[in-house]
Amino acid sequence: MSSFPYQDKPSPWSSHSRISAHLESLPAQSKILDVGTASGMLARRSGNMSLRFFGIEAVSEWAEIASPFYEKLWICSFDDAPDEALRGYDAVILGDVLEHMSAPEAALKKLVDLQPAGCTFIISVPNVANLWVRLHLLMGRFDYDDRGILDKTHLRFFTRKTVKALVNDAGLEILSVRVTPIPLELVSPFFTTAMGGFLHAAFARLTSLFPTLLGYQFIVEAKKP
Image 1 (spheres, rainbow, N blue to C red):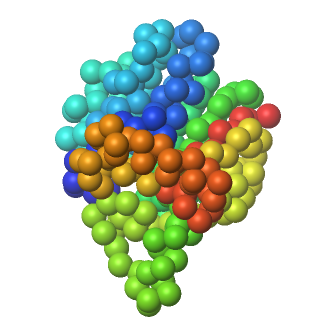
Image 2: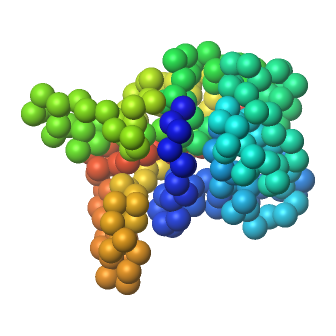
Image 3: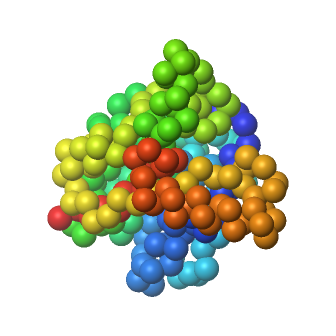
């Protein structure tokens, strides 16, 4: 897990905003497991005060920041989390988590087996088939970085096809697959200005037309039958 501070992605097209928006539509008193809370962005941004957030976070510094926003938070890795921490939720969020696991298939299957029928899963993973990565591969480069698609802590890489297969193989029914654009607001402060926001919106629309080529992340919503 990276020691760099985990950054919120505030744009309306980011995985953070889209996952948060979905959580707002859940019924009152829904019990939510946030696997890999980081600094607690999802619970912190929630406008639905009736939702019950539970979390798992391995980085103690992040867990300390997140803990006030969660009913209970286990400070441990997923592999060390007891079954009591993983069982019996209305929704499970795996936001930017599976790519950090050496065996995401086993982790997801375990989570699915521990949830009741009808549990919603929301999963986001980076798109390794993004144009930027493809161009670098053409030049013979596959350089890791501190953040982004080729974050040096990523152990697994996904395309739209492979993340759908992962979710299906875990026994979930896919309801939707959405795509996010590159978080340009984290690339340059210009994209937080009015003109930059307009260009960001245009790029988001273009990304939706070419999801496998331009997509930064895929967000899968699925349900346990």
